[in-house]
Image (cartoon, rainbow, N blue to C red):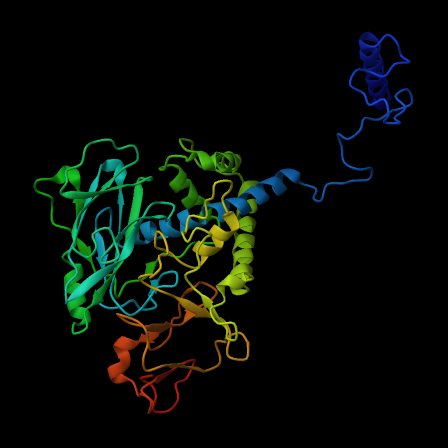
Length: 466
């Protein structure tokens, strides 16, 4: 059968050549007369197949393609799945749209959040604009407390900041979150924020004033209001839940649940033109809007391995940064924790490309970044992975860190320790994730006014408060 197929191929080529070029001594139209190719004696076309002896790298190419697409899908969807974790965790605590999680005290390790802060009370919420615009009433900054934080879309891009550095400039006001495609006129009494997605989330900090307490910051947080615009003129009172002593599990799941949540996201949100290629890849994995999600066993296997490999790939990039611009001091081991894209933003979208690897790495370890880094950021983060000798920090050792007496901050400084396997607080008997300038009254200071902080399995004798 093979021989007959080959003969048929030769006959067809001869027939086409003789029809188009009766004079066989003359090169075919478009052929290079000086190419040196003997058209009469050629038996194989140029190109069209791999080199002789080539073999596929794996026996099951269908599985391999699904694995590759699953791996890339994890990198692509990192910001969206990471922020979906807040939606999932809120629902698990009984907080539906417009219900606010207001901490009565700073977060402890039971708040499983990516690189969170444990010094001032958090305020979290999420909503669904498919039901219409949402009003978010924010209080004005005062001597008692002020807000700092971001409202983000489902890609975790900040669409509004709040507080003195936000859209309200610390004066407070009514923010109106409107859904994609909204063209209804908005009254001047509102600050309209057009959302490119239906699901929206926010995370604020209630920062106490110089002479205020955490309890006062908590009371201030409860002056927020959130409701659907359609409820006016008599919106129902905003519901608050205190998650301080509850487990708030927002971290991404690096198993098949990643793709279940990705399906939930795709099923709600509109597709941006930039993402159509990826949507085609997701369709081959059984993730498609308007169609049931029921991947076969082969696809599930590919997904499980793809998400695990993506995790270790991003761990490798995060723990061993190669970008020299992230180094904060050339002679020390501190890196810029607020590194951004080339535009000093956090979209990683450029005129000619999207930096999928850079974006995935950025959102792998954190959430809720500002819209843009200005000349004087409202907050700044540094991180260290090694001690003064360059040796990676180990969980079974005790380390010290000395904070100078005069620190150039307006509100507070803090030192927080994270578990680098999950980028979250470490569970410990003290339920203490870090220390800050708010803790100075209870800590022992050095003779020059500086304070030495310790972290490790055992505190030095007499320095438990440090």
